[in-house]
Length: 159
Image (tube, rainbow, N blue to C red; front, side):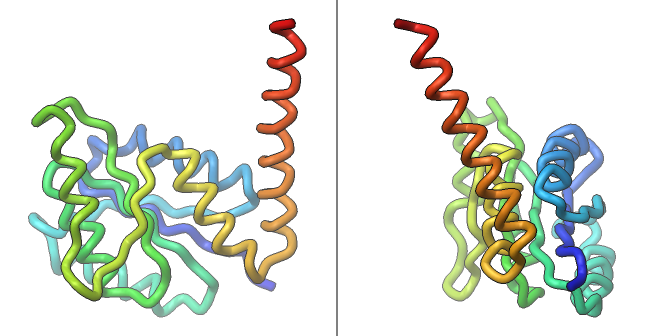
């Protein structure tokens, strides 16, 4: 069985730190990642060529898109690929945080999931792959157990 691939597509290099957090979390689930930069607004032909490259790759994949402000990248990606797309826009204080709405409202037939926390975006990708990949499923279960154990430990510490 081939290693599942997470293609992390960012709109600009300004998103690299956010994308690195996603990539690191994905690797913790045993997922391979690639980081790419392509803008739906500024370089649509380049973004399409990136998507075509990975769509031609037969491995199971999930795309995680990272773009702020007017997040056309997530809808653009979702409309161009067959695999699941997870939008994980970077947090922003611009516009009072209202720019997140560009990730939430998509046209009919365009359905990227929206997950705001980098680790949780990686977790959703792992859960998607875990449906058919037992090794990834084991990593998800182990992560959930670690989170539960921390809560139990914290509870014991406050008594």
